[in-house]
Image 1 (cartoon, helix red, strand yellow):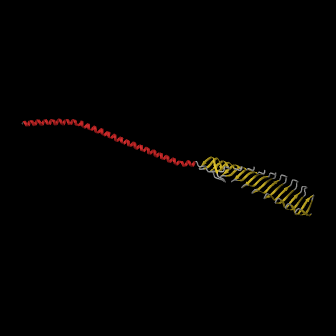
Image 2 (cartoon, one colour):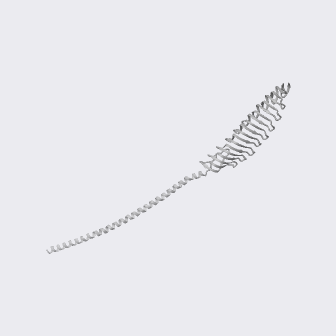
Image 3 (cartoon, rainbow, N blue to C red):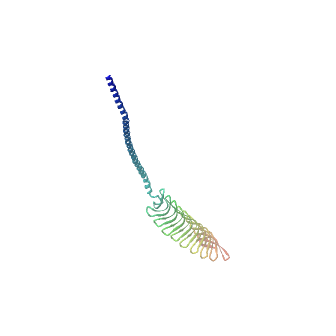
Length: 327
């Protein structure tokens, strides 16, 4: 019994100790659990911060690298664009082209369109002997302008595709000049030519020659009004000498050829056929006293049969190269 009592007491004592120990553990457990939880949370938070920081650092590093890469790429693009622009700059510095005529030209002043001189400008020949001041179209002299040669020749007027074309004035170093219409560098149309010998022609031109109707004045006072062909008197015309002598009629090769009438200052007159400036063929020669001879002429002389009329009489005559053979 004693043993049993002691055992019971011992058992109860042990149960009490176990119960107290269990209660202490239960009380402590939440505390320990709480502390443990707090410690783990704190540790996790720190790790997350470190991880976040690392990620942030990596992100910033990545951004920095991307930024550097972007800047490098931008610089490369700018560099490429700059390199690409350089040829254009070099091309812009290339001189404007001028279409050459008989010499090479250089643009001194003016605009450039598509590599060619355009608009109002100035140019000189490569040898600096010729000068042009006027308008350009696609590198050619076109429009109003002035062209000066090194020998003193000067043209002021209209140009077309590099040629003197339109209305203009040409002045030559010997004092001669032309004022009028031109086509492709040649006198063509209506104009006036003043010669160095004081001669003057006003009228129609064709391909640089007198052609058509015109009036020519010589320096000695003689003049011709009539038709021209290829630079010579041909066709109907009126020739007047400074001494008063006149011829009205047909011309060929600058001479009286064909039918016409020639009068002299003393009152004599011949009407009939001419050849090479001489009476030739049938005609009537009227003397200053009113008498006349009607008949054949040869090389300017009475030749062959004819009739002298005067003082109410008609006399048959025969002549041989200006010599009377019989009445």
